[in-house]
Structure formats: structure tokens, C-alpha cells
Image 1 (cartoon, rainbow, N blue to C red):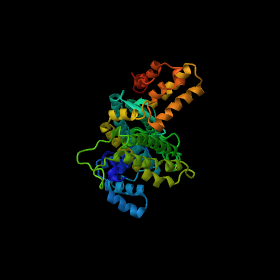
Image 2: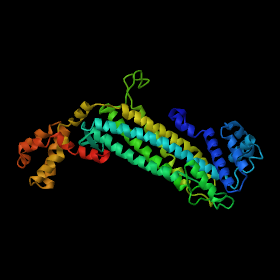
Image 3: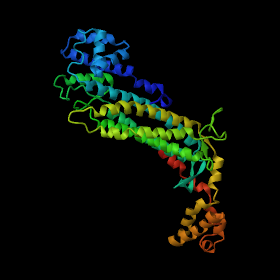
Image 4: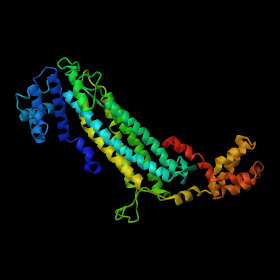
Length: 434
């Protein structure tokens, strides 16, 4: 991913230096286990650790790979240059390249997930803060983009909090599913390496041994992982889309923070555009872009092929780096989002009481009017508001069929805004707990 949409902490996880460091740790821990089993001499295993503080020469490994056309062999050759050919002769004993590559990928995904969970915690904290801040700030709810009934800005934030909390729970589960390692040899039979080696390596690196591998770790795990990232990205877009709508000039119920010196348009100096949330919408598409290739990686030929490899070299770093950046950007948007309660009230009252139509409908049915007739009476008066700019309550009070069933006081009561917020505390209790 390009630096513009990257955070250095996540980028570092996918650097060649980090990758080779993990490769080394896998090989060194495997040698320790082999020595404990008496398969290799203990002094040879100890000698491998002499490279523990070595900065592996990425350029040198690339130079060797240009000849060998094999990245793991190039690394092992370079390691032998560091610790000596004789001491290196038992390194990689009984192992296959995928033991190193797959275990490393899963370690990187686990570490990336830990950063993603921290980012999600920041998003959740921001949403919770803003939800309580605007718990009772009235706002019109919309369906199909059309005014529906009153809600609160706090409920909007709470809804997004609950969605992100579900996403976090899925990510925790995805982390557990991807946290496996395999040191099982050429086709996963342990023919040339004891399962105890795998158990030791995984224990040292915080993984669980893969119950059954072929030459690779099963890719359904990775498909589930990237699908989870895709769902979280969609939740980011869900929040971003709401902010973008609220910032529209004719709505302006909220807007992204506009800093001193910021410019909105090269042509129009008055512009204050929702550039951050538009950017988040685009970044969400990039994360979701990895989901289908990850699904297609599940079906490999027999015990393995490498059709998955090129895909994962791209989607592993790109998806985690992009999602990490997007989550932190979203958190910043929420933390600094400017809310306009007065505009929310203005928008709510734009059609002069029309949003209370359901309360009147229900009151008529409770007063003995049939459902069909109640709907007809309310809609008849509602259309005058839409088409003539009339006041809904005034029209109802002037409708003889309506006043035959409801007194003026009963009609008046149906326009109490607080009626719509009476269960906000209950909903908040469900979302945030007591």
C-alpha cells in the first residue's frame, strides 16, 4: 500500500527485515527442538542463535535469490554465510519451505490483528463518547432518504458502536482461527520431522499447531480472516456514508472538522468537502477487494500448489495496512466531528409536524376507526403538507372526520417530541451495559 494510506507501525510488520527475522526464529526454534530430540547436535542448534542479533542483509538475500530463484533457499544460504556452512548443515532439517512461509504469514497476520484491535478500540471509544454526548439530541430518522420519525444523534452513534463491537468480536475470532503454525514436512505427514518440533516452534511463537496440514496450512482459515476484514471495512463505509449525507449543504447536521488553513476546492474557495469520509469509502473498497481472491485460494491442487502465494503476498500487507489506516482515520473523524443540533431541529420541522403521522394513525385506530380509514384520513392531510406546505396539525384539527374521533387535546398530544425518546435509556443499556 502507498505511504499516503499507511501507518509505520503496521508497515513495519510486513517489511523484508521483519519477515526474515521471523524466518530465522522459526528455523532456530526448530533446531532447538531437533537437538532436544537428539536428531541434531546441541552445539549446532546453539550456533544458529549466534545470528540472533544479526541484521540480515536483504540485498544479499535478493542477490542469491536472483540465482536460486527460491526465496527460502536464498535466506538459508545467507544464514549459512553468517554462522558457517558446517554449523548450518542441520538448519531446515526435515522441513519444507511452506513450513516457514505459512507459519510466518500467520504470525504476521496475528501481529497485524493486534494492531487492528487497538485501532478498533479507538473507534469504539470515540463512538461511545459521542453517543453519550448526544444521547438525547433529537434528529430526524430517515428511510429511503426520506423523513421518517424522530430519533437521536446518540442512537445513531450507538448503532454504529454496536456494529463495530460485533466487528471487533469477529476479528478476535479471526485472530484465533489464523493463529496456527505448521512444521510438518513435505506433504504434512511428519515423515522426516517429529511433531514435537512443530509443537515447540508454535509454543515459542504464540501459535497453535495446525491439526492437519498438507504442504500448506488450509486456506479456509485465511479466507475467513480476509472476509472478516471485508465486513469491518463495510462497517467503516456505513459510518462514512452517514457522515457524508449529514454534511450535504441542504442537510448540514454534522461535518468533518475543517482545520485552519485547510482548502476545500482548488476552484471554489467556499467549499468544505467530506474528503475524509469519501476517502474511507474508497479504502473500504480496497479492503473488500481481497475477499474474493482469498476465497479462491481455498481450492489448491492436491497437497499444494503456489497459486495462492502471489495473492497473499499482496493482500496480506495491503489489506491490513489499509484497514489499520482507515480505522484510525475513522476514529479521528468521529472524535472531531462537528455536530449541529439546531440544524437537526430545523430539518425535523421542515414539513411542519408531518413526521408524527404514525402517532395520529394509531390514535385513530385506538379510537375505533378502521385501519384503512385511519390511513386514508392521515394520508389525506399529510399530502397537503407535501404539496401545499400546510401545517399538519392545523390540517388535522380542521378535518371533521379526524376530530370526530379525536379531541383537539388528543391531537395536540400526538406532537410531543419526547414521546420518541422515552426508550433511549433502555437501548443504551442494551448497547453499553448498565
